[in-house]
Image 1 (cartoon, rainbow, N blue to C red):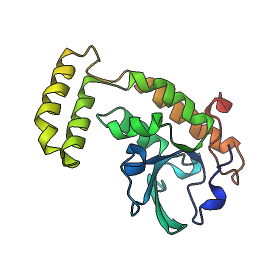
Image 2: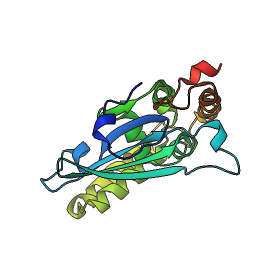
Image 3: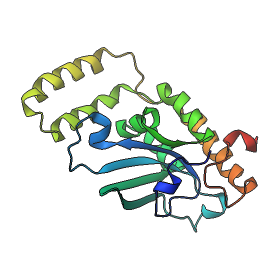
Image 4: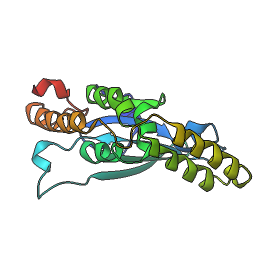
Length: 193
Protein backbone atom coordinates (compact mmCIF):
# COMPACT_ATOMS: atom_id res chain seq x y z
CA UNK A 1 0.00 0.00 0.00
CA UNK A 2 1.32 3.47 -0.80
CA UNK A 3 1.53 5.53 2.34
CA UNK A 4 -1.06 8.32 2.36
CA UNK A 5 1.31 10.50 4.38
CA UNK A 6 4.31 10.14 2.05
CA UNK A 7 4.18 13.70 0.72
CA UNK A 8 3.72 15.11 4.23
CA UNK A 9 6.80 13.35 5.58
CA UNK A 10 9.99 15.21 4.56
CA UNK A 11 12.32 12.68 6.22
CA UNK A 12 13.12 9.17 5.12
CA UNK A 13 11.03 6.50 6.79
CA UNK A 14 11.80 2.78 6.95
CA UNK A 15 11.69 1.20 3.50
CA UNK A 16 9.01 -1.39 4.22
CA UNK A 17 6.49 0.32 6.49
CA UNK A 18 3.97 -2.19 7.85
CA UNK A 19 1.97 0.11 10.12
CA UNK A 20 1.94 3.69 11.38
CA UNK A 21 -0.61 4.96 13.92
CA UNK A 22 -1.17 8.09 15.96
CA UNK A 23 -0.48 7.54 19.68
CA UNK A 24 0.11 9.65 22.76
CA UNK A 25 -2.05 12.54 23.89
CA UNK A 26 -3.83 12.81 20.54
CA UNK A 27 -4.88 9.17 20.65
CA UNK A 28 -6.33 9.62 24.15
CA UNK A 29 -7.99 12.96 23.39
CA UNK A 30 -5.70 14.74 25.86
CA UNK A 31 -3.80 16.96 23.43
CA UNK A 32 -3.28 20.66 23.98
CA UNK A 33 -2.32 23.32 21.46
CA UNK A 34 1.32 22.63 22.33
CA UNK A 35 1.09 18.84 21.84
CA UNK A 36 3.28 17.16 19.29
CA UNK A 37 2.08 14.29 17.10
CA UNK A 38 3.36 10.93 18.27
CA UNK A 39 3.32 8.18 15.69
CA UNK A 40 4.39 4.62 16.34
CA UNK A 41 4.55 1.66 14.08
CA UNK A 42 6.21 -1.31 12.50
CA UNK A 43 8.68 -1.65 9.65
CA UNK A 44 10.08 -4.76 8.04
CA UNK A 45 13.80 -5.20 7.60
CA UNK A 46 14.57 -6.78 4.24
CA UNK A 47 16.00 -10.29 4.34
CA UNK A 48 19.39 -8.92 3.29
CA UNK A 49 19.50 -6.69 6.40
CA UNK A 50 19.09 -9.38 9.06
CA UNK A 51 21.72 -11.61 10.58
CA UNK A 52 25.03 -10.33 11.88
CA UNK A 53 24.79 -7.19 9.73
CA UNK A 54 21.29 -6.32 10.96
CA UNK A 55 20.05 -2.79 10.50
CA UNK A 56 18.36 -0.82 13.27
CA UNK A 57 15.50 -2.67 14.93
CA UNK A 58 14.06 0.64 16.13
CA UNK A 59 14.00 3.70 13.87
CA UNK A 60 13.18 7.21 15.10
CA UNK A 61 12.39 10.12 12.80
CA UNK A 62 11.19 13.65 13.64
CA UNK A 63 10.02 16.55 11.49
CA UNK A 64 7.81 19.61 11.71
CA UNK A 65 4.57 19.90 9.78
CA UNK A 66 2.48 23.08 9.90
CA UNK A 67 4.44 24.18 12.97
CA UNK A 68 3.78 20.92 14.86
CA UNK A 69 6.53 18.46 15.74
CA UNK A 70 5.89 14.93 14.47
CA UNK A 71 7.77 11.99 15.99
CA UNK A 72 7.71 8.60 14.28
CA UNK A 73 9.17 5.55 16.04
CA UNK A 74 8.94 2.15 14.36
CA UNK A 75 10.15 -1.28 15.43
CA UNK A 76 11.17 -4.04 13.05
CA UNK A 77 8.43 -6.66 12.74
CA UNK A 78 10.44 -9.27 14.67
CA UNK A 79 11.02 -6.92 17.62
CA UNK A 80 7.37 -5.80 17.53
CA UNK A 81 6.21 -9.43 17.62
CA UNK A 82 8.54 -10.20 20.54
CA UNK A 83 6.98 -7.24 22.39
CA UNK A 84 3.49 -8.55 21.57
CA UNK A 85 4.38 -11.79 23.33
CA UNK A 86 5.34 -9.92 26.53
CA UNK A 87 3.28 -7.86 28.96
CA UNK A 88 3.55 -4.87 26.64
CA UNK A 89 0.15 -3.23 26.33
CA UNK A 90 1.31 -0.31 24.25
CA UNK A 91 2.13 -2.50 21.23
CA UNK A 92 -1.32 -4.07 21.41
CA UNK A 93 -2.77 -0.55 21.38
CA UNK A 94 -0.71 0.30 18.30
CA UNK A 95 -1.69 -2.90 16.54
CA UNK A 96 -5.41 -2.32 17.11
CA UNK A 97 -5.50 1.48 16.92
CA UNK A 98 -8.28 3.06 14.86
CA UNK A 99 -5.98 6.03 14.16
CA UNK A 100 -4.09 4.42 11.28
CA UNK A 101 -1.89 6.66 9.13
CA UNK A 102 -0.51 3.82 6.98
CA UNK A 103 -0.97 0.06 6.83
CA UNK A 104 -0.06 -2.95 4.70
CA UNK A 105 -1.24 -6.54 4.24
CA UNK A 106 1.39 -7.71 6.78
CA UNK A 107 -0.53 -5.78 9.49
CA UNK A 108 -3.59 -8.03 9.11
CA UNK A 109 -2.15 -11.23 10.62
CA UNK A 110 -0.84 -9.87 13.92
CA UNK A 111 -4.03 -7.81 14.29
CA UNK A 112 -6.08 -10.99 13.90
CA UNK A 113 -3.79 -12.76 16.40
CA UNK A 114 -4.11 -10.00 19.03
CA UNK A 115 -6.62 -11.91 21.20
CA UNK A 116 -4.09 -14.74 21.46
CA UNK A 117 -1.45 -12.27 22.66
CA UNK A 118 -3.50 -11.08 25.64
CA UNK A 119 -2.68 -12.49 29.04
CA UNK A 120 -3.89 -11.74 32.52
CA UNK A 121 -0.59 -9.91 33.11
CA UNK A 122 -1.45 -7.00 30.81
CA UNK A 123 -3.10 -5.38 33.85
CA UNK A 124 0.43 -4.37 34.95
CA UNK A 125 0.77 -2.10 31.90
CA UNK A 126 -2.38 -0.18 32.73
CA UNK A 127 -1.52 0.12 36.42
CA UNK A 128 1.77 1.69 35.37
CA UNK A 129 -0.03 3.99 32.96
CA UNK A 130 -2.34 5.24 35.72
CA UNK A 131 0.64 6.01 37.94
CA UNK A 132 2.56 7.90 35.25
CA UNK A 133 -0.47 9.97 34.26
CA UNK A 134 -0.64 11.44 37.75
CA UNK A 135 -3.95 9.86 38.59
CA UNK A 136 -2.84 9.41 42.21
CA UNK A 137 -6.29 10.00 43.64
CA UNK A 138 -7.61 7.17 41.50
CA UNK A 139 -4.63 4.81 41.64
CA UNK A 140 -5.78 2.89 44.72
CA UNK A 141 -9.27 2.43 43.29
CA UNK A 142 -7.98 1.55 39.80
CA UNK A 143 -5.41 -0.84 41.27
CA UNK A 144 -8.09 -2.68 43.20
CA UNK A 145 -10.37 -2.90 40.14
CA UNK A 146 -7.59 -4.08 37.83
CA UNK A 147 -6.23 -6.61 40.31
CA UNK A 148 -9.70 -8.01 40.91
CA UNK A 149 -10.30 -8.29 37.16
CA UNK A 150 -6.89 -9.89 36.65
CA UNK A 151 -7.48 -12.45 39.39
CA UNK A 152 -10.93 -13.31 38.00
CA UNK A 153 -9.71 -13.38 34.42
CA UNK A 154 -9.89 -16.49 32.30
CA UNK A 155 -7.07 -15.14 30.12
CA UNK A 156 -4.04 -17.41 29.90
CA UNK A 157 -0.79 -16.87 31.77
CA UNK A 158 1.19 -16.86 28.52
CA UNK A 159 0.28 -15.79 24.98
CA UNK A 160 -0.65 -18.45 22.46
CA UNK A 161 0.30 -16.64 19.26
CA UNK A 162 4.06 -17.28 19.32
CA UNK A 163 4.11 -19.84 16.50
CA UNK A 164 1.85 -17.78 14.26
CA UNK A 165 3.92 -14.61 14.77
CA UNK A 166 7.19 -16.48 14.15
CA UNK A 167 5.84 -17.85 10.87
CA UNK A 168 4.63 -14.36 9.88
CA UNK A 169 8.07 -12.81 10.44
CA UNK A 170 9.75 -15.53 8.35
CA UNK A 171 7.23 -15.26 5.48
CA UNK A 172 7.33 -11.44 5.50
CA UNK A 173 11.16 -11.42 5.44
CA UNK A 174 11.24 -13.85 2.52
CA UNK A 175 8.68 -11.73 0.68
CA UNK A 176 11.00 -8.70 0.85
CA UNK A 177 13.50 -10.59 -1.28
CA UNK A 178 10.86 -11.18 -3.96
CA UNK A 179 9.57 -7.57 -3.97
CA UNK A 180 11.12 -4.53 -5.64
CA UNK A 181 13.55 -2.63 -3.40
CA UNK A 182 12.04 0.74 -4.32
CA UNK A 183 8.54 -0.21 -3.11
CA UNK A 184 7.92 1.81 0.05
CA UNK A 185 5.32 -0.34 1.80
CA UNK A 186 5.70 -3.83 3.19
CA UNK A 187 5.05 -6.71 0.81
CA UNK A 188 2.27 -9.15 1.51
CA UNK A 189 3.54 -11.96 3.74
CA UNK A 190 1.28 -14.39 1.93
CA UNK A 191 3.19 -13.78 -1.32
CA UNK A 192 6.09 -15.83 0.02
CA UNK A 193 4.06 -18.99 0.52
